[in-house]
Length: 335
Image 1 (cartoon, one colour):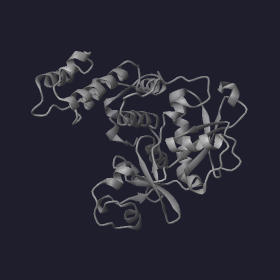
Image 2: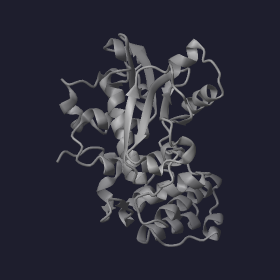
Image 3: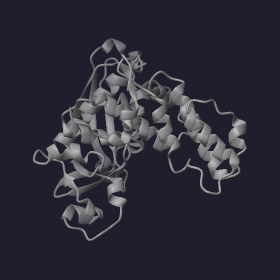
Image 4: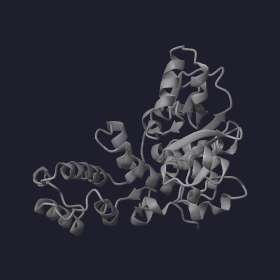
C-alpha cells in the first residue's frame, strides 16, 4: 500500500474497531514540540515546569492557575489554546467525534490551523488505501488554502504556501503567472505525472485543474461523498453540475464563506453579476441514498453544494459546513 501525507502525523495515531482514529500520547507530544510551545532560553520556571511535566505525561490535567503563572503574555495565550484543544481531543473516543463536536458547538477561539490539522488527519484516515491521485489532490482543498487562476483556458488551483514561498526566477508560464519559485516547479496533475504524486504528496506542489466538466471537480465530489459517509454515517452521491442556471436552491450548503454568500443571494432571488458568477468554482447536486433521513422541508428537493473563490482568486474550503449544514435527521459521527 502506498503511503502519503506523512506530515499529518497519522503514524502517531491508532485506529479503533469502528474505523475512527484514536489520540495517542505521541500525537499530543507532537503539539508540545511546536515552536510556539518550546520554552525559550529566557522562559520562566512556570513555563519550563509545565512543558516538562506534560512531556512526561501529556494527558495530565492542567489547572488554569498553572497557565496564569506563566510570565510571558504570548506564552500564556499559546498554552491556553493548546490545552483547550488537547482537552477537546481527549474528551472524545476518536478525532472524528472530537471534530464533529467542536464544529457543531462552534469553534470559538480554536485556531483555524488546528481545525485544518484535524481535517488533514481525518482525511488521511478515510482515504487510506485510495489509489487515485486526483482524489488525493482534490482532498487537499479540505485543509489547505488554494490560489486559483486561469492558465491556458483552464482554472487551476495551486497551494497557497507554494506560491508564497521564497521567490526565484520563474521557469514556466504557470510559475511566472502565479509567482512561484523556480525551485518549486508546479506541474498540473494529469495522467502522465499522476504516479509521482505519492513521492511528492507532502510537498503539496501539484496544481489541480478545476475547470467545469473535467476530472478535478469530479474527484472533489467523490472526496465529499467519503467525508460525509465517514463523519455522518450517511451514504450520498455527489454529482458535479456544469451550469448554475435553473437551480432551485431550496437547500444548499456553501463549501466556503464566499459560496455561502452567493447561495444566500440566490436564495433571496438576487441576480448575480457577471463578476460574482465567475467566482463560482463548482456546483454539486447531493442525493442521499435514503431520502427518509432528509428533513421534511428538503425531502422533495435537490440539495446543492456550492464552491467559490474570492474576487482575489483564493479558495478556503470549510469542510465543517458539511457536518453542520446538511438537512439530515441522522447526524452521527464515527465514535
